[in-house]
Length: 428
Image (cartoon, rainbow, N blue to C red):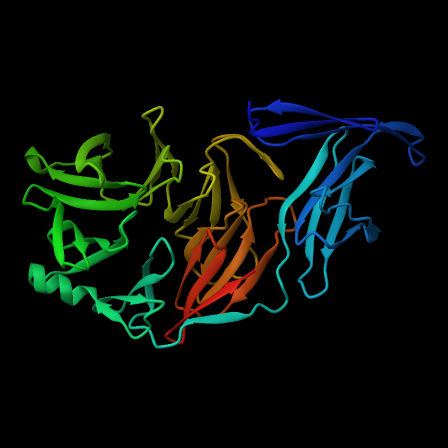
């Protein structure tokens, strides 16, 4: 049997592994005599894992031996009195990391998935020739092609053939006639196909042929409200006109493999502006025009509202959390499942991430890091990486400034961004 997670029970010099259904909880059993209070107290501990591993750890200014290496993933500081401690993690060439932790009796507080950011981050040019747009519409799954848009048209550029720029808008107009393209994304498993929303509805566009394949057609009584592509499916919301000037909204799926469709759920009677599906496919998030953010559970078939004033949102790669930014600039994380790593949260809890240095700048976009514990946030013309930790101090770092748009590739752990009409990349 495979254990998804483990619980550590620390007794004397022995560590006992106890399987649990979620998270990682460290227990530390020990006693120390406190000469300040002249009493025997139960002790706790602090466990630290960092990237990179070879760092200097300071506890209240005192250097602690770093035990991480080939065999051990991290450092356990045990036998600590229950109180607050200041942690500082340093490495030459990297920005320092700070955290204030409260140690509880018999428990171990954690600092896991800690990323140290280099003092100098080298950016690399990806496409040397000027892009035809400054807004990223989508990247291909193999990160070899990009679709950008300007005020009028969408363009497809290839990383290898840098002189090749394909005007998608012009090609669609030649096939369909004059139409407004509203959104484009790459086909989930066929990179020669694009999924295109235009005035008439939703189509699959074959670049090689070129030809259009109908998916959904707008009519006088029904129209497309929002859509997204995930795995081998397109999920879309249909707005329908009923009698007495009433409108209804329903969530549908379209199977790209066998070309079938079906209704998933009936939705509240409000226009849907955006829809996303978690990587697991178990949750579907829907945002309406009033800022109400709902999550539909495929298992329970229930629709739960988690926010009232949201503007943008994103599922974490582990599908256990969803981050959303409110219209007033607040950044929040909602826990879909119990979370017991670094911070302890129950399913249904929502925390506010009090990022500090860029409150005056609007949040334009948020994307999860692959560890599901950090967020890339586009704040004005900056990209920052922010940990989702409600314990002080919150660590956030500036990665790059003066950008127009960005994209994060989770597989390669590379950030791509547009700056001065060129496409660049950076690694942290």
